[in-house]
Length: 605
Image (cartoon, rainbow, N blue to C red; front, side, top):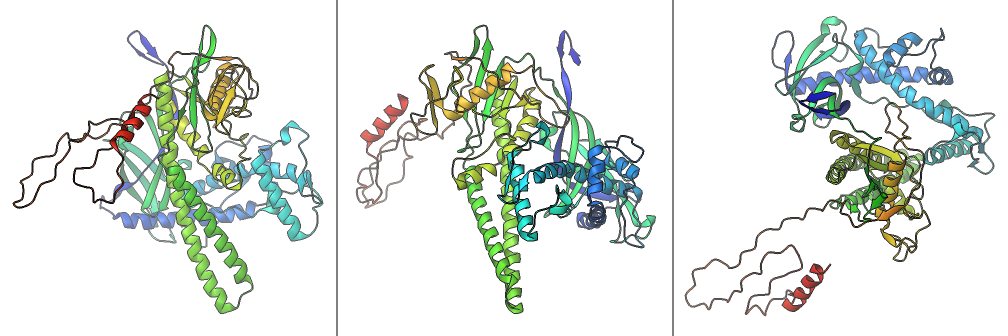
């Protein structure tokens, strides 16, 4: 709580992440400068040691007993396992093994074990779910029976993936399993990512300081691929600039980054703690509901609570992705085509002659490189799309004075009924990334993002809770009883905002997860004529000259007669009349009368 005069503002600490790159490197002992290419090479040696040791440790621990211990959360002395991964690994006796003659500091081993335990803890939930699903799997029909207990329910997409894995194992082995299967029986050990999470270490390996809008990271790096002693680990001081958009934030602490290598070299993934306005969810009176749309990323609508109950003007806002959605769909189709080509060539190479097999494998390698490049491009566009969407929704909610933003629960959201192509396109959209970006962006404005049930949000009337009619097709919604309607995505946004306001005192909060509302209560939302929807900004157009500059006439040439251009307008349908004497042009010009009629029709809307 911070106080300024008689005005008191509540603040809360929130962590966020940011990426940056070093622009200078020096040896910490001698102060001599080091080339950034040399730093990338030495970081690559560190990542090779971490990745190899982590992969070996995961392979040794890939057995059901490991997941039994992680699921129970107890060690051999029946003590609760600590949350820190490297401490839990030390208590359980899990230690990485390095090649003979290679010296690795104990703090690097902490980084390895922390990453391994985090991966295995994530897969422990999957192991329990696979055991429950395999027990209900019918080998004769290939169908998983419905769950009998409340704890056996898993997301439908996860269940479909496990069912395909069980069916593939049944075809491969030719017989039904004797009992429930574990994750170690149907999956291979996961590959370790080439990264070094320095947050698991202490100051003996790495430390970070802030000075003059710059981050200074001091980290020990090997001087050769296989260091034989402590002398071959030297400290390097790296300096990176803090991004300019963070200058105005109240950052209280910077945490040790995660080091990765990409095509441009060393990349820092830094985490920081900042103070943001604390949102009061229990006293919220205005909410924005965000509905995920099959045509664009999302649409939003506003619901306000007053003395007369809930009200809305049913005029929503639709996000304009500026054509990025079309580009993503094209890249997705291209990636799927490359995948099908590579799979077909793989099947052909399995039975081909040795010389033909070598040619096919070369083509497969090229296709895999192209598919990887397409995936990188899709990831970059998805990130840009997610943060642009988050910024626009946050500005929309702040202009309306909203205290909460309600989004659909992605675990209960099923994409179906729109065809195989559209269903796949919607399933691979950046919804989860957009939710994370929205939660981060809205927190800076003091707005809470909550997850609400998505079932029948676009099929029921917000006023009477009865099914809506579709007089104009799929994208239209109308309730003849309440005489409200419009775009179905906007109506769904009203329902989502209503559920957030009605159940704002029944929010479930879990560590590391978004606040969730699990009940869908109903109260009539009346249509009002009050303006609680922010006015969208209009794009400014360039100025148009009223006359052309005077040109020096040529001798012996009859100059053309020019007509002044029309006055600049916000309506793009107004087109200038062609110059006199330009009848020989093949361009089709719009007559002045028809253009005027289009302008009048647009102004009357």
